[in-house]
Length: 323
Image (tube, rainbow, N blue to C red; front, top):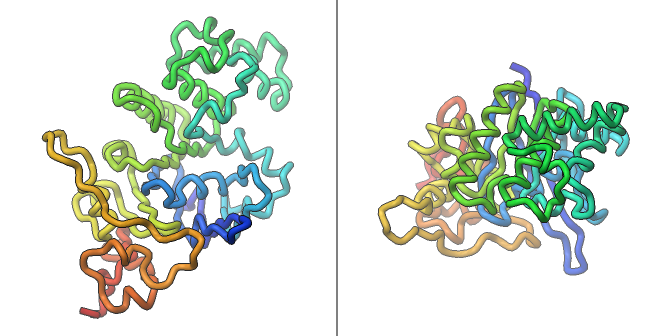
């Protein structure tokens, strides 16, 4: 099957007065039609920088994005801003972590959604309003005609995320990027948003790139998981296999850090991630690893394959022996 999205050697860095920040350090992955792929990692692992780089959505000119982002076999990184504008929203939709950073506080919800229909579809005001109300109903917003007239600050966090989802789905994209869409929501609302995402994905026949720091949200929702650490992929596998047979020590620690519901203290991951301003020498996880090898000091591990679809960047997975 041909991948809908294929990312090759993606690198993202930010130029600052105190030196470059290396946010994404050579990432490769593929996403297939109708598939749900999770990208998981703690804060600072490069997840959000990766998501924004796919559509070149950075608000600063001091960012450098290199590599290839192939959408339907076309490299989006070579597109002009006008060409990319035709992809954003129509072919690829995105939900942001903080709706208030995206929604205009001075415009009503209805007007913000209708604008896209005016400018992109050249709809009449009446047709655009009907389509907007239809979308609000579709994402499970009660009293849609009332919410249509409200402003972002008048809505709860869960309602704002549903509005974001309505905007992202307005033009029936084939790919939806959801960057931490449930972070600020309580557990009940989280479950509702995830259920709605899955329902709409199936109805629209789209692929979903789901970005989160919480592995607990991934089980039962995604088909494959990519784990990021210090701007690199350290493990990728089908979701069930990753939960049952994690291979990278970082993945194992993330799984151990999940709440167990037994009242016991959570396991933390000791130590700190490497400085994103420094080039990596050896394995990025070395300072936090309980069982390092000599080669971990010297070389950054590639992704080794233990099964056809299970890959881990750990020297312990090398078929050769360094022990």
